[in-house]
Length: 314
Length: 314
Image (cartoon, rainbow over all chains, first blue to last red):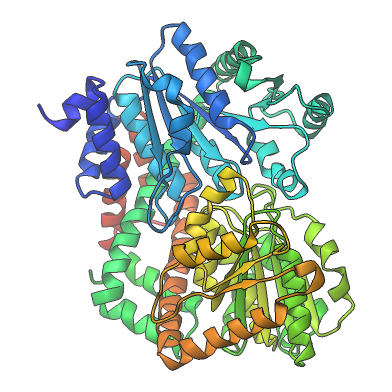
């Protein structure tokens, strides 16, 4: 039986192999994803993000166990802040999730996002598709909430949970600004620490209502699983809300457009990178820019115009 | 006198205004950058990166003062971990740099990177061009070293300084993997803390020689400016090394190609985003993907093929 069929049947070893192919940029990946796409649309994709040290992984683990109690199957993707150059990933999160690893209905994978344009979005959205096609009910995606990745996760997930803790350092607080805008639900984790209530109030004041949804703030203590049922209920509330008010359809439309755009960029990258080595037009343009005979903006517009006229040689 | 001429003359108010135009994605930006490009190539671009809390800003400030002692003019760009959605920036780093702000030969700017493909690279490389064209000798670019931004800074800067401190937390240590690969010089800041020597040894063991350059590790205490002259010397050593062995030319060639590619992506984004609203081809493709009549990979390849044949309507 081929890999694709095994993935469809929910075979974890096949899933692991297929995801490795994504990570390695294997040439066969696109065929696999193309086939898998027609079997997607079932899973609920939950993004969990927040600064380092907030206990995201533990909260994710407890949330997964909560869903298991309801009989649902789970896929977990953890994106570690690892090298975008080598593509290597660390074992830290996997170890923290040891209590889940023995459950045959839970698939866990640490992933490294590949570099380049929207690296996280691309790698994650590909892996999510495979998990979805394999029949997982819930897909939990963990990312570190700093900068660009914040926005990227909101393009992949159906709902974004932002995890914060009381009394983070100054620079970390700064990075919360982006997080404030992408959170559909907030978890104040380690809420037995001092100043937890102040953080709850701060978040409530900072977040704005979007599409008739005011993001709720849930107090959790992940190590004790405290607040986790409340978190799951908030996620379910959001899901119902977004189905009811038509928001879900808008999100899915945007995601379809975004995926085509992203793949076009990928295809363009392939085309241009080949061309940068061998193509006369691109090579000439790069030399002219280097010698300041022209500027990169003019060069780019000229090359794209040539492309649209069908005169760009591959 | 127009804005461009004032920028060329090193007028700080004009520079500030021009950089705001970049941040706001002003339509006039491209003309300005196109003109400025022909006046670039003079400045040395120094990237300073590292995890939050390592004292990067302070070290950058002291390094700037070191260069001022040599009579050089300085431009400073600080990219805060701020909202990629609103584009807002924080004042934290600016306050920390108060001691520099009164020097008329130092231009300081906090910037927010714009979202989208390679947001930091694009915003930063545009602002750097203006500073370069305005006659600054040294351009210092501060970024927070987590994930993707690490690689991006290495595309803009001539040299990348990675700042680390002893005894960072577990998750932060993880994120160092990417940093290990992009650092040309390492600073172990707060080197009066325990275990500083161990970190120096760890870094020396972790970094590899690239192009006959073994990245040196310099111990600094930024608050006291300790180690800053040594850091400046290491930067100068690297500059000479990269000129001597031809590495500099390779980097500049790669940068020219990269900038054209980046601008082509930007131009393609503009084209496609217009098209996503109004263009029949793209709209149809997005609907088909949403209904699972086709998949995003096939749709993207078909649209690009259409484009290369000159059949894609704007």
